[in-house]
Image (tube, rainbow, N blue to C red):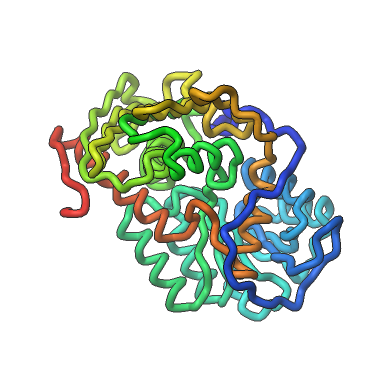
Amino acid sequence: MSSRRDFLKKITASSVVVPYLSCDAATSTTKIKSGFYDGPVLRVAIMGLGSYGTRVAEAMKDCKKAKLVGVISGTPSKISDWQNKYNIPEKNCYNYETFDQLKNNPDIDVVYVITPNALHKDQVIRVAKAGKHVICEKPMSINAKDGQQMVDACKKANVKLLVGYRMHFEPKTLEIIRMRKENELGKILFFQGLSGFRIGDPGQWRLKKELAGGGAMMDIGIYSVNGARYMIGEEPSWVTAVETKTDPVKFKEGVDETIQFQLGFPSGAVASCLSTYTMNNLDRFFLDAENGFAELLPATGYGPIKGRTNKGELTQPHVTHQTVQMDEMSGIILEGKQPIVPVDGEEAVKDLKIMDAIFEAARTGKKLQLGQR
């Protein structure tokens, strides 16, 4: 299946530990001793055994704090293959009709939902009702209303809801955020986010509104929406947007091909971004400030991420993103640690509210005030 993953470069095997901001630790009965780590291990079941689910599973081989122990799929042959490849016991295997039985399985802590966007809401709520923590691939849902219902359901079930924002743990990204927080760049003035690639197979689910909830914005444009927020360090107050569609056959109604959007922030900073499914070589973040600049190019691919600032090249080592993400999420779920940039459901709802507004601004041609809708 052609997808965003075909455009992004293959991962290089390596890993580093990205520091947390310390919090009180919770206890866990499950521990593993690996290298210098002797602590609780997050036992993970992956729901959705496609290309990205496979990428996560492979990356988890190098995790110290998380372990793949279960699978959920609608394809029996995939379940069998994964059982053999990852040594998964039969009792930890489920299909989409039976995974509510997770409530009776004490050997699984969390389910990582990696299915088409429109399926996330119901699946996450079912996992929560089964009493398991949830990691949901981004976008968390197809709109903010559904996203908030997911957050509420997880709170009601007293389980954590995290979202697969892997860039929130990427070292070069975190270095720019550190520079911004410590005022090394001065007042932030402008952010540019370019997110796009030329999508292939016209029959894939990412081009079906009923499964994807949209087009390029849901899949790749969300990186620029989220990146504008953590790079500038504020929540936007207004949005404008224009949609361009050159192939209405491939990109049917409700499936965006290209959207240019602008965000305004309370400090006066502005963001100018592009989300597209018809242009390659678009994976760049640029932050301009009074006393300097920062650039990531590529900015959100699987790696290696490359970056520079007015002080020179960023030299933090490459990370296998999903390995670090899962180790860090283990700390969040089992030890109560807090990441430098949030990865919880509330963070995802903020992105979804902005994307809802982008779609409306593109449809109406109006400048929309955020927080007042």
